[in-house]
Image (cartoon, rainbow over all chains, first blue to last red):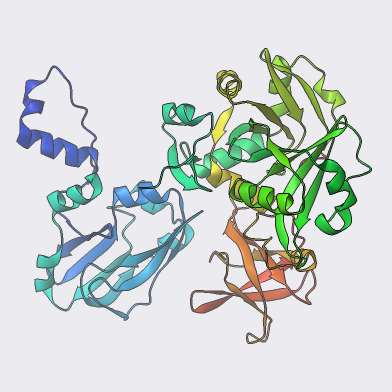
Length: 154
Length: 328
């Protein structure tokens, strides 16, 4: 799904509706409304008992060109906010933290040869792992789009 | 709250939307748009760096420095001619390295360029040895790349082709006084333009109009690692003697995992620790992970293992210079 950047036209009065302004601001920041987030800038998309995990647009933008991704092995168990891998830019090594507890059921092997996919499409082709959830209730502890926006706007 | 120092180009960086970070108590641009693009601009055409945070210090007591050159420095300076520049290292009483510097001989005077992070330390050290110094209040803009000289010559009032590598001359650039120093920290040809605080923005803006790419500290670091140039705090330290620092070799990694400063280097038996990584990165020009490492008793061509997080990854020892186009 594509995210389009909306420019606020000063002559468009509806853009000044505070509710609409919030939606526009989240779109400008490339925060998807239908995902959950951690304060460590991971996003998670939940589909029944499977969760797909990646890092946000804000995170890839801060990191710069991603040149290396260290992926975990399939079958490994991860805890909520436990480390599951590493993403590196030229200058930085950044740990990846799992939004939820579960078992790794798939890893995005393409990232070994094209780590820059995370920069180009952080919410789509740039997904990093998929896990089988152990405790779906944990999603309550995650941030929604509004909560994540607060974090990156402060 | 920490108040950071700025260079004369701070407002220019803000105008360009640079990402500013703290470095050596200065607020400096780490990149403007994209580190890899800035790095490649220097290798392929021309880029410029604000190096205004580096200390440019006149050695008032240069007779004492000359007399003490065999103990205080790693290379002598008494045989330098006017217009000459020499790379040097200041040595402490334990034979450790205080800083690496460039010493300039200007008629009968000597001045030196210090690392920003060591300016105060260096001046205090020299003062203790009864060598007085004076801050010249000059600032460097480094212009580097195969196109650098052509562009600088357009605005220079002297013939730059007459200045050899590691030589300098006073002149005017775009109407203001500068020192044209044929030096750099990238492994490419180019100059470092040294000007007053007031004139720095004019020099920068003139170069911007020539479409020179502004480059930040991020690209500066990847370029200097590829060029095998040491950085104080990595390849050079207070606690390391000059001999130890000269045991630096390069490593080209066989895989994709990236070595970083401090990671351990092991022999092929995977258990004998033989050294440590001093600087590591993903090389934008070579497209592989590379490193500089302090390694004992190993030769160029031999293979080693680098410990990256909990696993060992193979690499090959190479000359500690991956790219050097300064003499091409």
